Image (cartoon, rainbow, N blue to C red; front, side, top):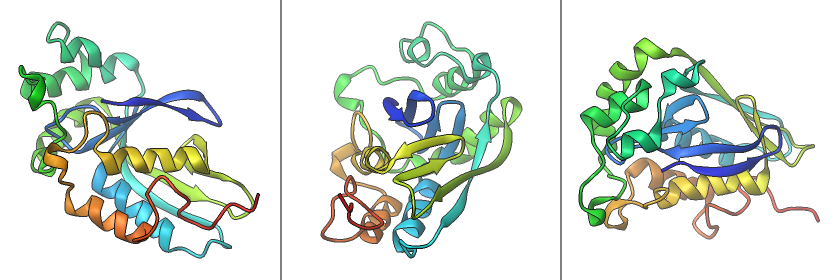
Length: 196
């Protein structure tokens, strides 16, 4: 499930997985696959911390809230509207609480997720930028203090809430972890130590 994170630009925003059968993430009304996010984080971790950094993540942008849908209504099976409703019609919330775990093979549903989002969204590039003279990372229009951006990374590392099934992570999450470093938790700084 997506959680609320404190952005420096827009206040609290939603970020996270929204269906356990897929590996798509949402950032408010922007959607992208977790492997692309992890790859971008890996590139950021490998970049020169004293130079500006920018990369992009293929994404879908939904302009209208009604085209996004009602996550809680879809989870409870009572309101299947918008893109999220379409997803939950095809991949319903599990009936047994113990089955509520983010699936490591979520990548297998990507074609379905792409087909369902296409009529409601426009494709584009979500920019990830970091500047050496700020303590912020930008993800599209959203600015995050570095420590909050690390919380986003940690969320993906853990498999969000409810966490990865059997505590096993997809290869792309493990690769992100390796890029961040073997001796640093993903929540910690991935560019350089804080100076204060």
